[in-house]
Length: 305
Image (cartoon, rainbow, N blue to C red; front, top):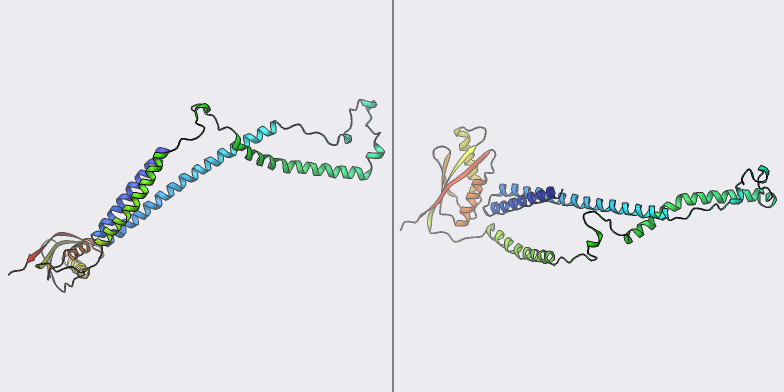
């Protein structure tokens, strides 16, 4: 059981690290659709890990409750064994041996005891006693056994004798120090990762490069209809969508078709490096319907003097 739980934790932890890494990577590349998919996968893995952890805790609680109930029941049985036999508080109502006094009953207390009122009151008292003994004793004994269970010795197993167990559990200073160091490291690492991610995904004005033209070559593929007209429409739609993803204006941009679904986009003036990264991420993200694109290369042409 522990091995299966360890495998589940390992698989879930590696999956969470994998999904989180690609979520950050796609965000820095400005590939929003892939980032959303990776983030959704990360949430699923986190829910899976939380569910496994809760089930493990519930299982431990159930085992502890069962062990506690077993110890309480054991103490209650011991209390029943040490209980004194109940005395008959109404001996005068019971008859004597039939062989005594020539087989007659003890009727010499007939006048003062067996009057109607005394018999009725005695019967009511007996009924009350029986009801109280049947209803009050089990609950009281169970509560008493529950209080005494904490004072009983722990169950002795054949593998671990009771004498070898320490009276006080050893202190786990190493585990506490590791937990504190991990928490402090996480608190210091979160602001750094946050700052790096914010800097990578921030839209900010940049200095115009010295180049005159930015060229980007990419291949477009469609699923289903793969005719030249369908590929041309998909490439045009994708380029018009991604053309608006840059911070710098790129109205002077042309899209030229080459062979085998390869297209060349020429943008004047040249884009800054951050805008080039955003444009490449948008093209490779390919958020149009049933279309995928792969950037084959990019470059910038220097200005002629």
